[in-house]
Image (cartoon, rainbow, N blue to C red; front, side, top):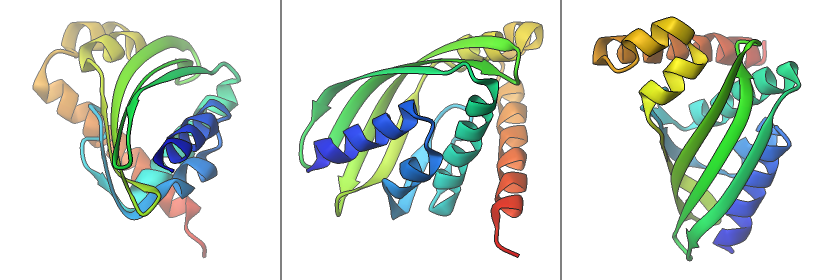
Amino acid sequence: MSESVIRGFYEAFARLDGAAMAASYHPQVSFSDPVFPDLRGAQVGSMWRMLSAAAAASNQFKLDYRILMCDERKAMVRWQADYRYAGNRKVRNSVLSTLTIWDDAIVRHVDEFPFWRWSRQALGTTGWLCGWAPPYQRAVQRAAQRRLELFMAREAPP
């Protein structure tokens, strides 16, 4: 059953269906990656809806994925996304995901990729020069968190 959860999540990702991705998560989910190091619960689904909407707007997104390992409780997936960041910078991000399944839903999701490699593509010269530095990384993380909070505020029902 867990393989169908994982395939469903990544097929939704390939279609940029943020709502279906969010529905793959357990209510108690936790997520981390180099840009969003500590998301929990509803923040995780909102992040995917926000990122999916941005990628769909650029109309240039491609995802390839391969399930490396999957059993009843855990999966490892290697995926690569090609997209435009902020509408103009080409990014190719290669990611290793470790996912934990509970009650037929993803309860823990950890994405690993080199921040500096991503930042020099997505953020240009500044990312190239500063992307290796922890203070710069924290500044990017804070900015991403603020964007997510604004997105969630707009997304909330009145």
